[in-house]
Length: 109
View 1 (cartoon, rainbow, N blue to C red):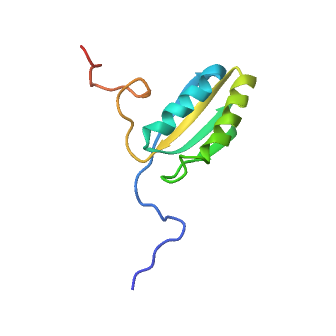
View 2: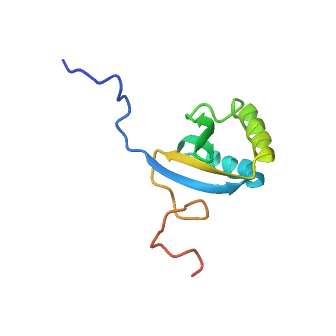
């Protein structure tokens, strides 16, 4: 018989990145992150303080996200600049959403 650590249920690694966005771009950027599918958690911060933390699971991305998106739209209207901390289940793909350096050239080059 084996014992599992109740504090460490998920053994998969998390990949974390932080994006800087202007207030009016906040809602659009969060919608893009939700549609990527490999995002586990989105944390919206301003000046190092957490304003909103959104856990995303496979079954939650439907009707339950609509009120959260309305709140994000209101937050975006009130703040000038914030950061979005993204915790992923897989490494971010190269593209416009990735903020990490990548040695893969952009498409069409």
